[in-house]
Image (cartoon, rainbow, N blue to C red; front, side, top):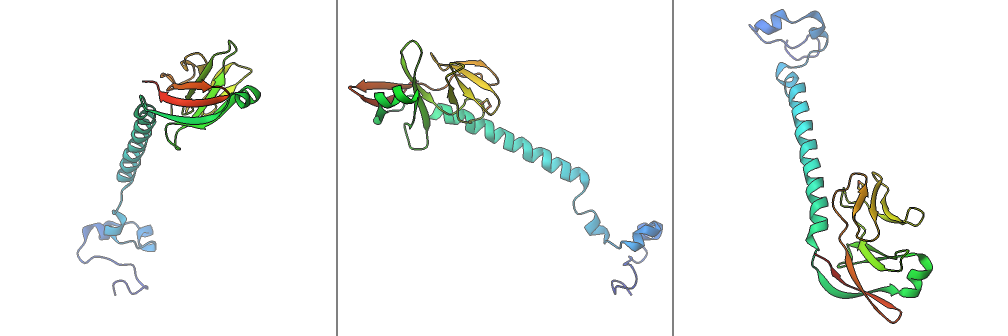
Length: 177
Ligand code: FES
C-alpha cells in the first residue's frame, strides 16, 4: 500500500520508479518534493541575492555622501578649547544621523569632514601619528587639508563641513557642495 510506512511510495506504471536504484527505496522521497528546489536554482538564487545586496550597499554608500552636500543651517558643535585639548571633536551635522569630525591641522587650520567613509560608509577616525583621517575597515586614508583620498579603496573625498568660530564656540554652518 502506498505511503503506509512499510513500503516506499511508488507511482503506478511509472518508468522512472521502475528504473530507480535500490537506495531510492530506502529513502522514499516523493519525486515532486525531490525536484522542488534544484541545486542550480539555489545557486542562481544566491548569486542574484548577493548581487542585489552589493548594489544596494554601493547605492546607499554613494547616496549617504551626496544627499547632504549643500545642506545649510547653524549648529553648535563644541568649544575651541575642547578641540585644542582633545585633538579632534566629534559632532553630528546636518542631522543627528550624520557623524562628523572636526580637527586642527598641524598648520593650525580648523577643518571638519563627514565621518562617513566614501568607500563603504565605515567611520573614519583621526590618526595623529599619521596626520591623516583613517578608515579602519579597509585601511583607507584621507588627507587633512581637503579630505581627499590618498590610499586604500576610497576614490572620492570626504564631504567637508564649513565651520565658524565665535569666541570659544564652534558652529557647523554648511556641508560644502
Ligand atoms: S569603508 Fe572605508 S575604506 Fe572601506
